[in-house]
Structure formats: C-alpha cells, structure tokens
Image 1 (cartoon, one colour):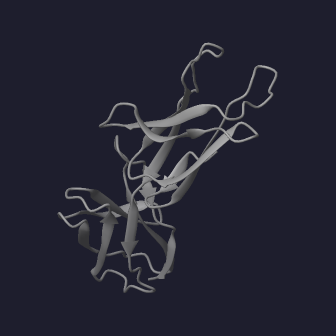
Image 2 (cartoon, rainbow, N blue to C red):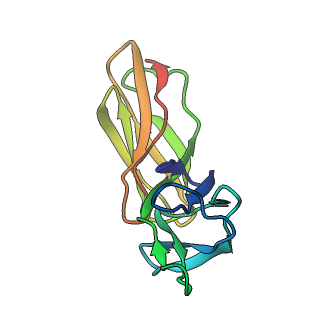
Image 3 (spheres, rainbow, N blue to C red):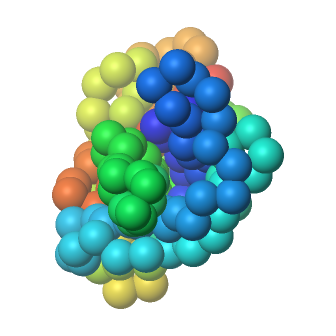
Amino acid sequence: DVSAISLGQNVTLTGTLSLKDTRPLAGVPVRIEAKNSTTDWHSIFTGTTSQDGTVKVVGKFGTNSSFRLVSDGTWERMPSTSTQQDIKVSRLISWSAPSSMKAGVAYVIKGQVQPKAANVNVAITIDGKVVGTATTDVNGLFSQSISYDKIGIASLKLSVAGDQSFSDSTTNPTQVLI
C-alpha cells in the first residue's frame, strides 16, 4: 500500500496468492522480484505462502523500484505473476533552518542531500519564490547565500527535483522572522 517513501525508511512488501474465488493458497513456493532503473528483474526473496496465502518481507530500498510476486507452475497449477507495484524513494535533505534573518542581508544556507551525490541541485524557496539554488559536492554537501527583502514572517523550504532513481524531495516549510 506504500507508494512513496523516504530514503532509509522500512517498507513491508505483502503479497497474497489466492484462487479466483478468493480462497487463499497456502504453502505455495513464491518469490518477490524487484527492478530499478539500472537492473532487470531479480529475486530479492524466496519463500512459501502462509496459511492465509500471504507472504511478507521487510526491507529498505535505495532508489525508485518496482516489485512483483511470482509463483512457478507445477503439474497442478499454472505459473502466475502479479502486476508490478512501484515504490518511489525520495532523497533526504538535512539542514539547519534559521529562526530569523535580517531583511536584505545575506544569510548562508548549508546542508546535505542523501544519498551523497555530486551535482544535485537544491532549490531554496521563500514564500513560494526561488531565492537561490545550491549544487551538492561529492559528499552531498551544499551551501548557498540568500537574502530576502520582505519584512515579516516568511515560509522557507528546500527542494530537490526527482530523476529516474529518486522522486522529488521537499523539506517541511519553516517559519522565519525577517
């Protein structure tokens, strides 16, 4: 039921094998297969269904991935493959938000994007307006000087656009007194 997670978050993959009349198939050998943008289908779990026809696996996934449940055929049962289920993984953005900034005075926003990767663009937004863009180094670290002229309470957040390996990532908005 989970279609979007953050990097490092545990996911429980659950599959059910049943007959057309919805009766569960217990004790059937099955495997869960996965693929991502750089791999083909490969087995990540092999086991048998429980009494209620289910199989469960807990794991962590490092990139956007697709999964399916597969059972091989026997002399009494046709092979079956479930529909593909996709899980989108978002990068983690770590940073220290300021509680206040002086209007029109430069303030440096620093942080890290995980997994560590060079050349990831981090957009810095205040009240819905991009006020700066930082680029990560090989350790995922970024630093960007920004300023904002409007006095009052502003909403500051950071975001990273998605790609074939990760979905979009956005920090929760932080209220900043300017």
